[in-house]
Length: 217
Image (cartoon, rainbow, N blue to C red; front, side):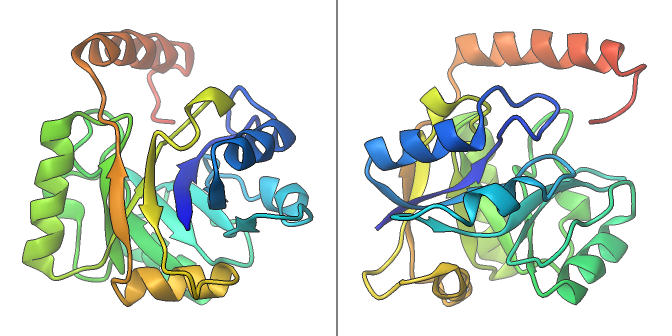
């Protein structure tokens, strides 16, 4: 079963698609599981968890003071702006696992020094990260002996499934999916960001940074 573990809906301040459109796109592309990990918002889960025919992992992408952290399996929203260790502790207290999101991405990645031992896993394939950055993340996870994840980081329904994991057939719910991640029972595949996309991303990031008053997302 294919699963995209990093999607943004209109509940993210830069997301363009509704939860309903994301679910429709995921089903059309043959995905059996998704995680809508909106920036500093857990609101999408109330809508997405009601859908039939696809597994939805409760998730959020939290902006820690040092960079983005993915939270899977949480039961409440995790506040932004805290330190890495404190953010991980809050994710664990909410019943979830903490994943270092695109650690080598310029602007929003944690950077290698902040991917600490307390992380449960590392995102090693993100469709909006360069191939070299994803390879570095893969090597980092291997050195740390941590499980891995992958996702499209889609901000529009058209990009859902651009990167994905493959879960074993015995995954029947989101709890099984999270356990399969921790048990390293997944395969990873998908696209990487192209050079053209990198130029567009840089322009977009700087423009949005200025619009936010020179603050991180």
